[in-house]
Image (cartoon, rainbow, N blue to C red; front, side):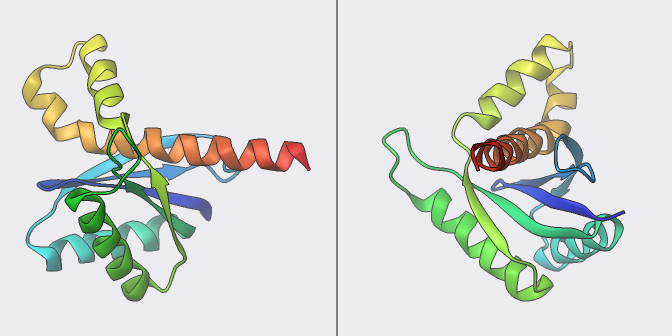
Length: 144
């Protein structure tokens, strides 16, 4: 199944992944992978890519409230570059401000306990950032 995009939420401990449907309309959380060891993370990414066959990767860019970039953004850009080199896929950075907070609120509302939330939050945040990216593309297509 070819999908337009794979969303990637880069955390310091875990990396969350989300995939879009074939039409590029809906983002769905896929899984969360430990950030270390890096070799395992890269193997997991390659596995997800071979399963989903995305056309591009959308990596969350954690900007500060004022829009500037700090250490977390530099870290996300570094991983994005590694993924681009490793997979050969185009990588697009996407503002992910507030996605983790929104993901946590949604998981709390769904009744997930703290330990469950920790395991799922990065994948849910990845789906929120990917959904935002998909919606933006749909808006651009509609405007043409």
